[in-house]
Image (cartoon, rainbow, N blue to C red):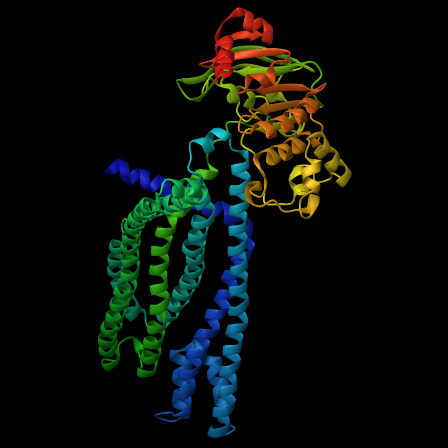
Length: 617
């Protein structure tokens, strides 16, 4: 139990650091917001005091002079205001009321002249903080290694971008806004109440810990429940995303009813938890309201006693003012307790956002990296091993040299580590032991962005964006001309089908290129990979998912692309790599055979068995 409490405190502390980190650039804005709030509350106070004092002067019980003296001696804060009121009364009661009404309007105007810009200012701060958080999340996701996403739900990551950020803004940022107003109002009202009567105010303060204790008990465990709620929200997002992505399978296996039932069952448990959390939050307001009004009644009784006994100089007029101020302080006090409840609820969102931002980057760049101008000699794997998780190696003691201009093919059974080996070259992962050298220099010494700018990648999973054909080909090369785009498309055997589209190169291809066939999508990926004329080309089973005709067109494009270029080709269809300069056979993360196609066939090993199996099929 004690360990759990320590963990909770650590998480809350980390969350405070998260909010402080993003609010720090706007410290000046927050200070100005607090100052404007002070002036707004100040003019609210002067309005209340003005009404009480003016009525006291306008209808004096024992004569004007006596009231003036009482005001000067017993309530010096309004001494100069009283002189103003007497000056107004000098014009006659009717005119005094009119002039005083104008004075009140002026005070209300001043209050709102300070209140409106403060609201606008804090609204801008909230928007900027949300913007900065989303920018930080996006930049972090772009830096994280691919292994992170293979171990995480896509829906969970999307939920942090959408639901968690919105919940953070509505719970923590909005609550901070309310807290500033509430704290400033309570402090200024308390100072005024202390000024009016110290004894009565201290009596009221003795009752506040009771209210605070009751409200804190109501909101206890709220943060933990909110964390669970955010996790369930992310799971709902994941279910929705998986349903959209797998709708074809769901329909083909007549699993619509099953999917509906699964979603509705989980959604029902999510709703129950959400209702439980909001019941606790909503209960805090009526409870604090009841306790606040009970305090008013108690103060009325005790204050009346002081007035009747002429204790502490508390006159009936001051007591009425006191009650007005105390009643007006109840709403800020309720806002304070509500804001604290919302902050506890929002802590779960902040924790999830901070967890993502604090995820360690396993692929990092050194402080002063060397520039990379392209491959001059070779890529060398020197005793390279790699493991996604400690103790589970995917690659073990790899020694391999890829010389400039060579085409090296990597083959082997599924799960043998082919794609992982290729992913080490653009530093999607870093080897856990050994060295990967380019031209004799450890790859980690080079600038990551410059290194990747000299590498083109075409994978089995075609990744295209909801953009035009030209936009997809020129992705990552914003300065490419239309002529360069078309030239890349011609080399990739894509120009002819592009010109048959409705708007040619300006045709939008939809989400993931769904408006194109598999072969057409793959050829666009090839065009995109070669637009920057990369020194190193990585082909990860680029033709394995294509039909015969599409494979022929794509293979023709690849043959043109591979000419006089360094290439690492991961092959599933072995017929496509028969002319490779070197073929590397992987099995369980180890290199078991190397050589040309003819050499490996003659060796009659694993490669020969793979070829025979495909020939049989």
